[in-house]
Image 1: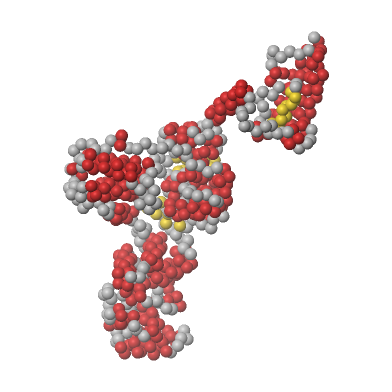
Image 2 (image 1 turned 90 degrees about the vertical axis):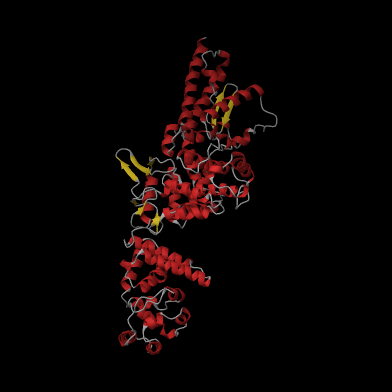
Length: 636
């Protein structure tokens, strides 16, 4: 039990103040009599606070209003063990009549500014802030990190003592930290990234031999200064797998210096080929196997370059040890799936994360770039429109992406429902930054974005959807629209043409054109392939009407006519003979040419009525050419 701060005696002054309070509020006189009985047993409040927890918890229930009054007015500090085991019945009813009422009101107002729901902010105030103020005797602006750490320690002690969880108290403490940071009471937001990373090293390296663990931790500490947090944690997990392999094949290995290629490295490569994912049981992917090998190679190469005494005496891992990665095409969403997902995101109740995903799709951002966007990321350039400044991301480069009016409106909508708060230290450089995507005063997490995407994807009938698929879809749409390689590189933030050419492999218009040309020649030479479908009867194509009135692209030929669907476009060979310089005719063909001219005039008028200007021009050119041919035939 924590020692209780000094407290004045529960003398007639405190009792009298409580009696006056009860009388003024029209409460039961039974509460006053219970307070008198409490006084007879414990002459001072300090004496009661010094009792064992079991005694304090068994105090007469009717004395609860007197104890609450004494706590709210600073006369009693009952210890966190009692505060965590008791319900502060009447807290909100009595709060407004106490010195702590103003502090609680300021806290709730700040929590509302940060976007906490009414229930979340009231629970955080009663379970977290209230117990802190009561036990410490501090006012809102006097609370410190040590006060919150002491409260958290008491919660953990309760878990060890009773086995009861403390998740609700943990959430309340975290919310209190966030609000206190927003109010300027605390200097740092709740999470210290470096501390969290280093605490995670020990957890991830479970199973690594004690002799090797200090070298692994020292190496990871060195990476913290030059690598992103996700990279460091991923490296820690992969090195842990190597460390556990060493523990299995050579438990007595004294140091990394004594690593042997055949005994330690080659057996690890073989083990990776047979290893399975610990959660799914599926074989490790080629990319994961390669990543684990690269992590070991980087460790050994780097400590050798840095001159660490633990470095092996010769190189042990080589490029030839890396399995070849497959080169799959980017996984993009087809247009119909893309539309269904957009509709599901528009209907999502989690507007901040859903709008974040819509913005990612509109601009082709990586998820890390998305959550790192700053509040002033949109720049208006005179004569050039609006541009989105994409922050440093995977390749540590910034870029500008042009925005259309709809995307600018989307950003405005995001600004309207993001939560306010103090600038937050940037995880990359530590300087305070106002992020675009903030929720409850903290930056929107990648996991929150992924969760909303998973729910929206399920609603749209899409399985195994990742945020990066939206970036692939953005790039694929640009390639289909004919964007140049240089522009695609700039929009996606690629540092090499090879990265952008992956999307060019999806839909190459030159390949398509060559395919269609070769296919047409092959069909002309070989005729219809066996098993192909026969041509539909004319009545099916025209609906039984005159062929010249069919809603299709039509061409009158000297020996017949051609009907094509609008999506096929005009045939490049239609009437090619009539326009050829070597084409010759005579008076015997004048009736045929005259009939063809009449049909061409009618087809030109039909195309104009349908708004097909190019098709109408084709028929007009044929009319002009036929007039020339007819004159030549008549003059002989």
